Image (cartoon, rainbow, N blue to C red; front, side):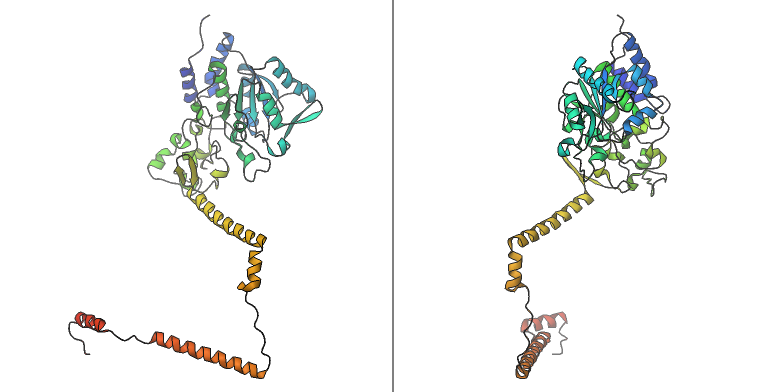
Length: 411
């Protein structure tokens, strides 16, 4: 059989060459189609499960012109279950899940959109019925991931918790990779994830297997550089031209752009069918592809200088707030312990709290108290007068004064 499939290096070059003028799907779809026709690639069965999410990643993929959802479903994957895209409902829909698990164990791919909710045993998120019983997203994730060949987290919530895990996070939202360790989770972050990132990663998996991943399990081909490195306004940063307000010309760093700490190729790929993206339109990057999004990326329109200390990253203002809060917390804890043990109340009663003065018993006692008070005032005044009196000059002091005056001392 003639090998028609391009090399992995050539495939990655195609992914990285996608620009506003040429979509990724236009480039790789013929390659995938040819590999499928030659029998070199099989369309993998896919279960797309949505957990705690706004469905934004599915909508992003559905609204994309290139690559279209139609292209993805016909030319790359064999989608078996997706609660939004499928026609079947109820038991007919969920039956497709368990038929896939039974017939394609170890072959199917599990795509997760949305964050697993872990609080209260996952009861903040139910995803379907099984045998008349509600199944939580957390249980469904564990059950389906155990038999999957690949687990792919799509969107910021599925990858790192995202907005679903923002403070105070009552549902206990986490990233999928915090729960599933095997097989290793492939993270495609973003709020939402760019359609090219999804299609490109799935195509690489189908044709070449696991792509090169970074420390956060993101495909390096799409998340290998920072937005700041690829930004169209990078030259303005180098020239020291900074916007003073969103929408102004110039680098948006001083009005809150998080491009220097966010790894993604948004400037190269752009959005809305490769027309535009936030920074190009005058709004700073909010770091939605970052593992720290959104809590550590806020305030979005305030520049937060970061402090790097090896494996720990924070920022100066937030560090100061933390120290202040820690001090307040220590004082509050000290107060609480004092009240709980009765120590503070005891000191108040035993003398810390001043007692009210007793009234005089009669007129004689009142005059005596007044005379003692006047004596105290007179004695205090004499003491203050002695302090204000010029101290007697010593012979050493007088000698120094004469030397400094050049012998003109009149004394």
